[in-house]
Image (cartoon, rainbow over all chains, first blue to last red; front, side, top):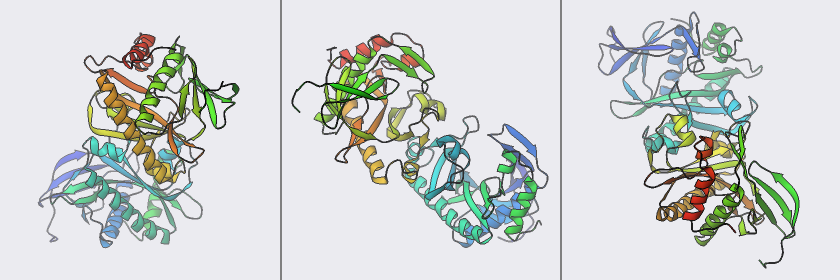
Length: 243
Length: 243
């Protein structure tokens, strides 16, 4: 894609942490990362200065890492501090969670100790709905309810585990444990399933390998302080700098 | 098994709706059906006179139907109004739910209309825990957390769908729609996986085919009245009588 000037058009969608705009390139959108932080399906809210730029930079690094490894994503390139150019995709109404260790909602729902390692990574599908609290659904329910076909579910599961392999291995070299993460998938205009949305401390749990210090949004969810510093530390460990 | 006199021994376990006793036969227990009704993980409680006897009679009919169809169960025979003889099994800590139409927790969790038909029956596994509210788990989580092996999960799924086929077809002839039901599975002393617990209006949703009148525990959960009458009607439609 030529490095011509990108002009942002109308806002198509505003989510809790990002805005999506049309632009002058066909089949592309501009994703704008906001400084807004929310948790618990939007019930807890705050502004964290610099968060948008940090997530944009971190996401771009992860998406480029995945593309290098042959995993298709919606990412085209970072445009500015808070903006990235992405390909237009039709999102599935699903959150795809990969877990390496027990944490967060899994610990709470099943009464398990946070940090318990899992014998192998697990993939789960949550139905994306704030009012319903993003409920867990079985892969069979996803297909029966028409949210994705069986083949699409299988492809998302396969890609999610590939993403886990690629990111876990890279992060371990940077002394970061990838505890779990949430992906969203979409179908591009050619019908290919690609990783979409963002991959950042808002959507992953990152722990320091030695100390298990949290370098992610749990610092905000659990009022631990040092949120921006943790996101900066993650960008630093990834070898990135703010544009 | 010879029809020798069964003598009940000590109580091994008391659940919300049943008690389990040792007896003088090897590898067998006596299951006693109580009149206690509970809902919402034990938060709502009442006594419904005659319920124990009705569930015992209905369960025996269903278990015999399954055995005729070649589905292994823990059931040996009905002993008295409130008692049945069952084989000793090691229960999995799981509830296995089969659904033909959307109802109950599925409707609530996913914001779907109760009564929506599913394109094909679905099977889900819940982790049996009252304090946790019997949370849904994926089949992969069941295996990773060691609650059953992958092969055992597959076998429970296969048996649960067989149970659905056998009971749905029979009930339809009796003008009853099998909306959904919960099974528990155990492993007998030979290591075979068998259907255990009970199969009754306490553990199934039964709707009249024409009117969709509820003939099950939802009448109690939802304070609709006519609970005992509904259970009696189910026994009647199954051609059974109280001993």
